[in-house]
Image 1 (cartoon, helix red, strand yellow):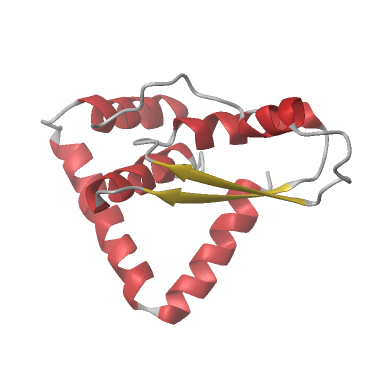
Image 2 (tube, helix red, strand yellow):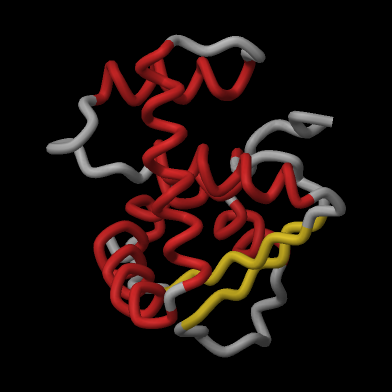
Length: 144
């Protein structure tokens, strides 16, 4: 399975809609996604954070039965959260859709995949790189 069965959900909105009013105001929301197959819920939730007007920290935890799906989600989320200085909106859209739905990719896309894959391997195998880059990624991408 390469994509999920449900439409993209703003999970912060779902939390607010279905949570009981007895909960005190929370500073951090932990979300576990099991078998979502793609990052649609993460992208939708991040895209809608400005509507909630709070400074809530959101942690996403993703579990997939196949490691291939985890790698695919990480790659698609990396494309979506790539800074505009490095990848423009039109290029980002083309790249995202090409990887989301195609089995054959253009040479430029194959080069992007190779570069990012090497970066992911470095992130996993080098602890110093993990701490520096992951903290920078979280601060730059998720807080905005």
